[in-house]
View 1 (spheres, helix red, strand yellow):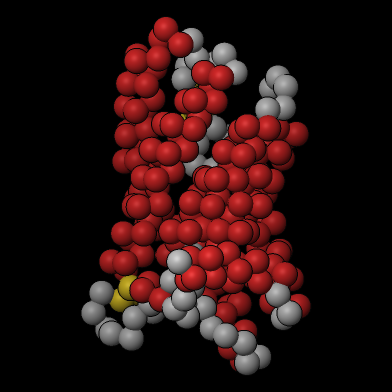
View 2 (cartoon, helix red, strand yellow):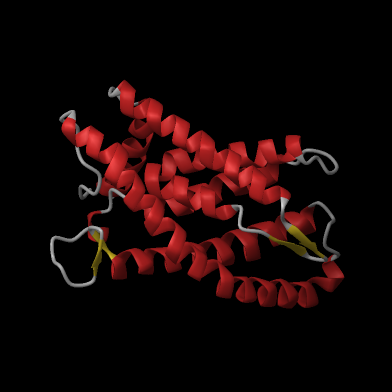
Length: 222
């Protein structure tokens, strides 16, 4: 339990720690990923009971690099900025809370400071990453996002605000479930490619500079 709460503390230090040079770099990277999420959101495809887009991937990358605390903040910012950039109706704070929870999921499951995604062995390793462990974490994070955020929280919020008629709930749930399962076929392969690339790139640049400056390297166990 102590390790669980320590994740939030470590995550907060990613942007608000004592090493100003690295935290500024992290802040810039986080801002760029949020901006990328907004661009992807603008290219989303609307469907009768939702929309297909990959705007969650930059948020997943933020959670992976900077942990649950930053993921919560980034999730809220993405929702608010998404409304400001593409307003449609009134601002609904419940969706902001859902976005914050989504960012926390990716931060808790994917955070790079979990030691089991790194390995000193040569087998099953890609640029220092333990591929099997990282792949399992990606699958777990996306499934939790789909089942908890999309299927439960978003569906409940849509019913609460009257976007989904309660009488049509069984049909709509079946439709949303089918849509989300189909999306997984595209989401997971893309995440398997993008997230390891982002993590390796970050490790080879920011983490390398941090190690040279005498700071704790990424991938330390908690």
